[in-house]
Image (cartoon, rainbow, N blue to C red; front, side, top):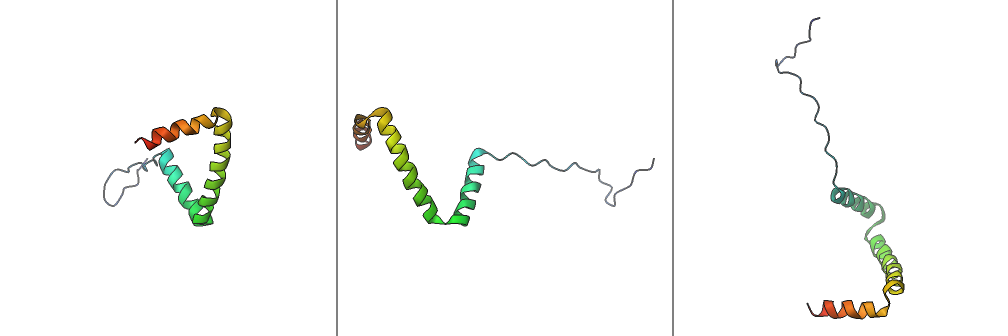
Length: 77
């Protein structure tokens, strides 16, 4: 068998394998795509909904005293 020779006489290198994307990179890429698709207002809207739902869940789970406690801790810093 005769091998096909390259013009520059360099051995053929394998294609580099793409590296995996970190979670932070994936999140950044998804957030950027979402911002381009829906705009800044979208993030404000989902943030208000998430904060409202999350706050209700936290209040049921820990009670209103929890908010008083973390408020004092945050205020002391």
